[in-house]
Image 1 (cartoon, one colour):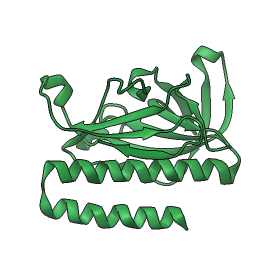
Image 2 (tube, helix red, strand yellow):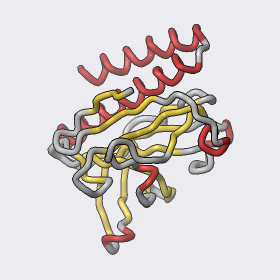
Image 3 (cartoon, helix red, strand yellow):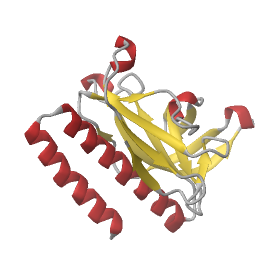
Image 4 (cartoon, one colour):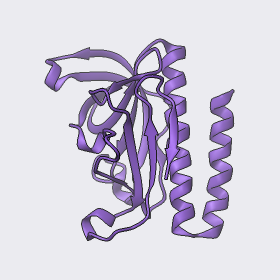
Length: 188
């Protein structure tokens, strides 16, 4: 029920953000979407008693990325195999990929000691015949963070697409995901 309400709030917020057309509002909508997906991943991990991956893809990461949009998706871990350094996770997708606005992208870089998934190695996810290498956050069956490794919380930086490569300083939204309880909390 909470996940449905969160998704409805994100959809309503997206409609308002698209009407205003302001870059800051569009970033806020993207941050709300990512926050709702993190909450959904955490609750899915607890209810399914299995690890759940929140995968973040750039347009180049997926074959469907030809439209130039970043995406976020959820996957349930079915099994793991291989060495610890190159662990392959066999997954099944939970729902469809959620697309961010064309003007929004992921940003690398640590914030206040929090680990950014874009600073960590990409994980190998095998979904049927498809193998993907993506930046991820993984919630374990108790709702806390399993990946990225370490004791610091994770942070996802959301900014204008291409802002890092252009070297411009632009406003960004940050979503911090707590290490112990897996709860997301926005940070400006």
